[in-house]
Amino acid sequence: MSRFNGGNKREMPELSTSSLPDLIFTILFFFMMVTSMREVTLKVRIQKPVGTELEKLARKSCTSFIYIGKPTEMLRSQFGDGTRIQLNDSYAEATEIYSFVMSDRGELAEIDKPFYTISLKVDRETPMGIVTDVKQALRKAYALKIVYSADQKQQ
Image: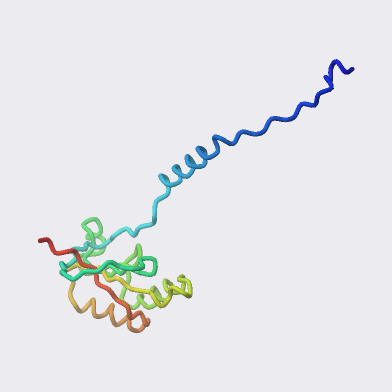
């Protein structure tokens, strides 16, 4: 019987982990290529005004965007030529801004709420009355930090 067992104990060889980092980086690369950050589909045409004294937003994660302008060419037949307000991916009225601000502010962490900012991206041909209506609705929602988006002046 000792001829078959050999008397020496054979151990199980260790599992090779040398290819594990390659596998991890391949999976990471795959997810980076497949995943995209959610962006808003613009339904209004925006030609930003030109400015000279511009600053970048410090905390984009604490910023909500309101787009104001005329509908794009594809949507003009459906919604007309009038100036529209876009909140996220849908058109809205100035009266809906209050609930929009409250829901966006409610999603923020308590530590980020003091930094909550509204960025108005307004077409340069938009009547000031609509912008004033939006600002009044923001005032009612106590969203007092407002920034206006503009393009850098070309030299």
